[in-house]
Image (cartoon, rainbow over all chains, first blue to last red; front, side, top):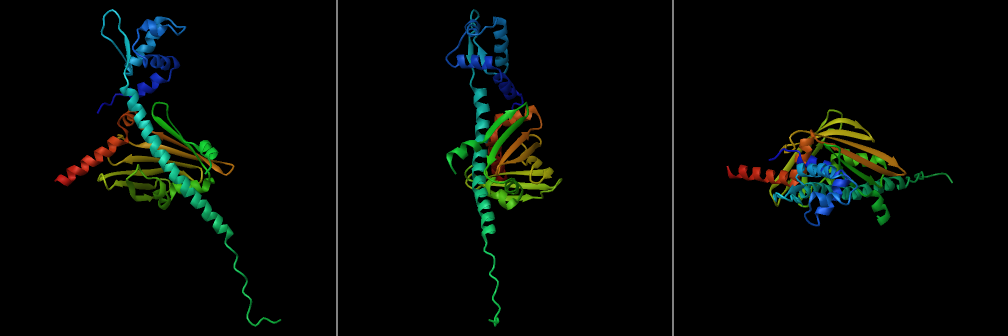
Length: 129
Length: 164
């Protein structure tokens, strides 16, 4: 099993708004660095740096065309990170839903205990009138 | 339970830093009851179950600092099992539990340290659970492999044993 912390890199890569915007653009299809830089008030080298981070995280790959090296989105790392989080989310949601029910029971028990009627004082037999 | 209350109590789960995952959830109950539900085995067995199909045949806890606990889950249909051992580092009723967990199968390569805090506000309890993995690499591996892999491995091991 790979031990590379590529998922760590994934989260780090996604932590930046510019990189998230780049990823969003790439979901619509591949693009050159120049095309990706256009919407940002940022130099091409600056955008290239962001793309490098995404490449290192395995989220983006570059085409082999010597002239244009288009950037492409690689979805596997995203899918992997999402799967674990989703699984744990579901697991915890289910557990806490059960805990909600249990707590309602426990609260009710406590309530009932408070409402227990106090035993009536027994009238002594042969009490004098 | 009304929808409003459901939304307000909704769970939040997210990675934090390079090696933690944080879970926050609010419960409509006083803190001492929630704390009990987290520390009494007969209560834990009622809710700390796995996904559908999994039961919890073993749940023992010595809820004192240094005390050990043992949780075992089983899936009869898949003939799979999962088990872990816990050690309580701190236990301060009704506000804090710090414990470590280590799966038998140890596909997380080490212990995770879990800090669970309970804060009461107007009759409700906010639970914040911080799960800290042994290292960034371990957290990533867990993120990558997911619990399914751990369960699949348990099943494989059982098959091996049955084949002998």
